[in-house]
Image (cartoon, rainbow, N blue to C red):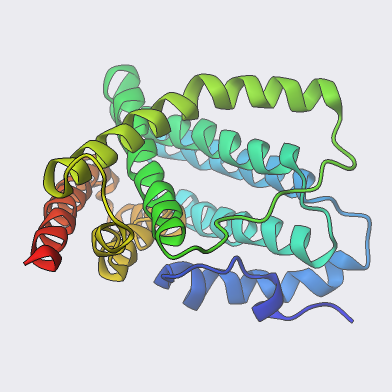
Length: 265
């Protein structure tokens, strides 16, 4: 019997509305038939990356309907690959790295198609920082409450050479971002709580409301927004929206610090 949505979804303290209400339920419809085949999640990742590249090519030509639809199909499949992996015990380190790295490739193609070779890579990096903030805030939320962040992925089935290459790219692109942001968030906590924050300080610093905000800036929401703007024939508004999102996260960070100060009064 194929697991249902509750068993194949990635459990999170805060839900991403677009993923949980739209894309994951649609993706779940594909899990049972796919589980009866030999379809691998990594094949799904490569396929939906191809859809993203097609959407980017369409945006470059000035098309709007086909790219908007392709982006929504890509988002369904982006949720589907993880659900299929969990349903069929195919979660691997290679799969995790490949999914994240192909998303970067797709985002770079989309933003470069819309904004050119100068703004496109910068906007891609800003999007990555927004997504990394959500990753770190969830990690810190769980750590402050003694919860497991993410179960380790199985390495069975990983090709060592492929895994090494994927790990190298992750170390070059993602790790510096995560380290920079992690140090920044820790420094801001210590600026309010002192050099030895207490467990209570860390819980106050990681409120669920801030995590709910960051969760709803996840990739499913990003592509839903870009698709909607494309249907409105305003896809160039997407990059400026990233600056607005970054400002919202900065405001949430100030509020996180304020929660620590209030908890100490």
